Length: 111
Image (tube, rainbow, N blue to C red; front, top):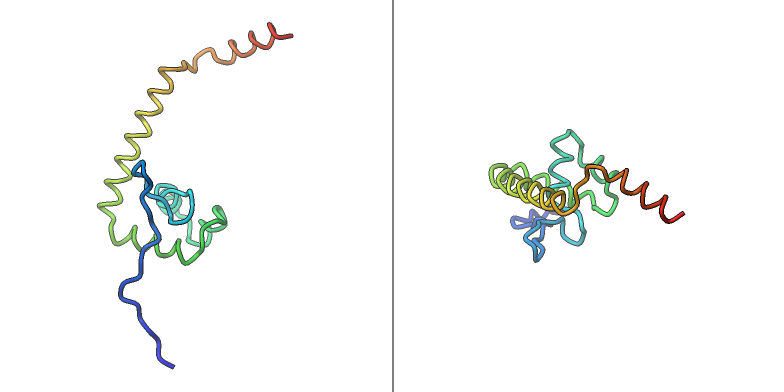
């Protein structure tokens, strides 16, 4: 029996229409897997947290992360800026200060 070594194995990552990179066939983002790995999670622990991910795909994604560290870091930094911008816009639209008081007042009016 001879072992066939694949030289070009596809990394299971796909970019959605919004430019977000996800593990192919799932809704999980590259950000999620990268942050779990940065926090010290093993591939097996990541699969336990996110059972939709096949273990082989997690290993492939982690290999990609390790081989393309600077590109992934730049992508994650861009995503962090995008998240901060969206959070700021959302907070501007709906000021979180005093929300508990407003909700309690609304409940009291309804009763």
